[in-house]
Image 1: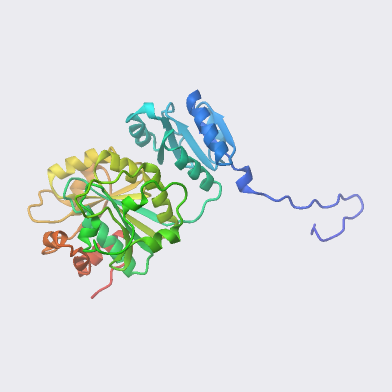
Image 2: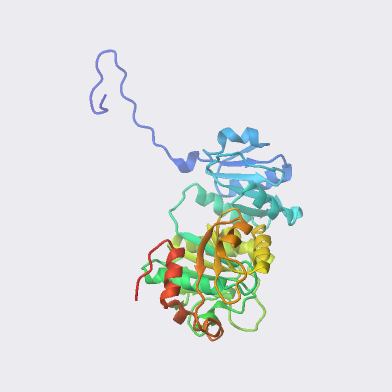
Length: 368
């Protein structure tokens, strides 16, 4: 019956539609039997203005998993249910140590929160999970071994994306890499660097971040300073806040990830996808296989760097490390000198580089 009609004899008056507010009804699901974790998470959820449901094991969590706005799994849980829809954050205590990251990779958790250090980040994450926004992709690029060419690939991808009209941002995720700005010859460009963001907490406005960053090659970038000064201490909460702002403000954030353990934990675990770059050599394949054990369980693909002296073919390397081959990085004459003297953007304009980057973006490269 149309709700604008009057009821007939014996009919009940039509009920007014009941408003539905997902942000009020959605709850956070915590799966743990550890009382200390439960108490910490309870305080964080309350501070974020949410509702918490706690169960002690996966069997008890299954009926509520996919309806939850966010799922938190304690460090005492050793597996996740199959065919789950809602992603999980592994939560643990500082005393859990390095085992947390290995456990997260083993069970397929998308994020790690070490309490109490990550309390602010977790509160922010839970607040956003009740009112999710569409966002861009954070694409991580990392070398399977030292000197693989990850920075070159990251620059070319950001440059190609910007050239195709994509709102792209290039982020330097290696505090020990010497400063991405040097590879762009942009050390004098006006704008913020990572040390300027030290101590930033809470949500970062994407538009303000974009306006404050320097630009090169038609895209903004965030770099560590290209100086010999001691690298500033940037905690994981600041990294998470910056990458969240990048995800909300850009269509594509390209993250050049360093290979240090702490760097991997701060940056790689914030990525939606990861590309691993490796030369076509046996030792590089072995190093890549080891690195994969430290990466989060997100879509990960391999790029093999072509070059003289290559001992293995690309499909063989991909098969040996167990991830799909997503491209061959071309050998361009003078690339080493271009990297050294800040001319990577020049090499990125060459046809081979553009085709390579466009392939990684799943777009067609343009001809000269």
